[in-house]
Picture 1 (cartoon, rainbow over the protein chains, first blue to last red):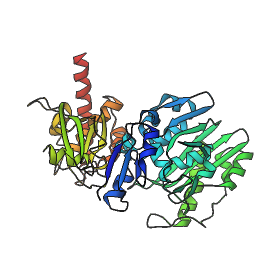
Picture 2: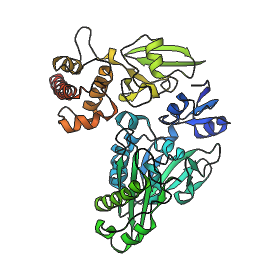
Picture 3: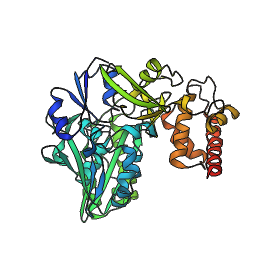
Picture 4: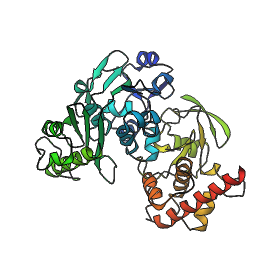
Length: 261
Length: 162
């Protein structure tokens, strides 16, 4: 790891004021390994772990709010999340392993926009609003490609607002070694509106599978997706699976998510 | 340099460290508590697992400066003098180790599993919850048996204390 200076932020305002050219440190479960490999070398880290206003989960009956420094284990075990959007608690409980879930945060995961991360699929399918220190960003506008988001250089995510859905579930096929999603599909239904978001597969990161949305909007069941094939065009292919294999998995995971929702 | 203070195995410690210092380096190289191991150094294997404010974390993927103010328990903090913790005793009884390198992390994870899931653990739960720990000898069979026994012993001890 290259050397850096460290500042433990006391508030959101303090964090934004002091980050400069540096980076925010949330749970650190992507940033620290990346720094150890010298793939990232920020000269300054602003540590968010003591910022009390970035912690907490609440619900107002129609919108679930999860503050950015909520750990995956906290989301997974939260009675508020389980009651409001149980599929979101299940998604959080399936990220990484127990030790990773004790440190990793929803804000860190979404800000990084790793193409194999789980939360971006939930944000996109549920039509979440990403709240930052300065504005509110719709999930539709937030994810802009591999590790690329609408966030400005020193912009800090403070919270996520997930509007309740009639039905929501996430199904993923995990890479058994890394535990990341080889393909993950989130399905959300709100009235006649159905959104299907795919992570792990797209070479530009998370995306919506509109063909499946149309099928599920007219008949919300796994069988509605019978015979529907995702296109392999624009999907990742690597040693873990070809683009065609991932395309097949998208169909399988979408059916599992629809059946579980 | 940065100043950190934390409680490790019940004792307050304070030090001036390079901010780059990982929690596992701080534990091993500054405090000379070498029971916590570095296996993969890439957050995969769990040999570096310690408890931070009561939950299992990978100390190779946590900065010591982030642990400022935290309460840390390492493998050295489990036993009461010469009396092994019930989970350590269960690993000994079941021979839940081969080379022993992963054992400190396995035991710290095992205690964390019992803290979260209770004392009656079936084999499926134990294997699933052990996803963050790798035994490169592949000695899982006796590790799983040990955790089941150790969990029951922890439950009995807690029951007796109540």
